[in-house]
Amino acid sequence: MTIFSKIISREITAHIIAEDNQFIAFLDIMPLAEGHTLVVPKKEIDRFFDLPDSELALINLFAKKIAMAIEKTFQCNRVGICVIGLEVPHAHMHLVPLNASNDLNFSNPKLKLTSAELAEIAKRIKAHL
Image 1 (cartoon, rainbow, N blue to C red):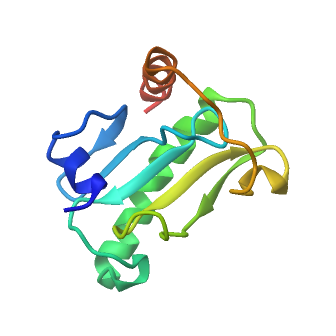
Image 2: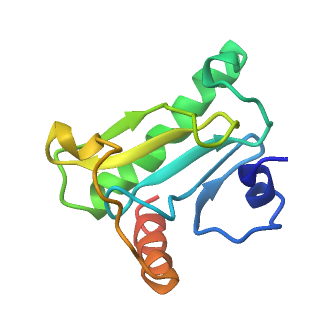
């Protein structure tokens, strides 16, 4: 069972932005920027592009709503999308508020935010859904 599956089953707490029957979105606890969100299928599958075509389309539609809320919450030029998937063997995409292309560089230092700060960020994003 992956850490994401444990979040989905509520064994591990997370700052959840949104969820439906198939997908969940929650804040990254080691974000590149405030609002950095992970969008994850609830079905545990390792590789993003191994998702069935119908689910691949639906996860993008689910992520679109989250990305639009992030854009309304933070001053950014756009929300970048990144699929890496090396850290956790559970398909997921990163949504990161961007002002420059280097903002999506995972070698950049991560923000160190408290649980209270993350909770406030989640609340602000959810207000725009």
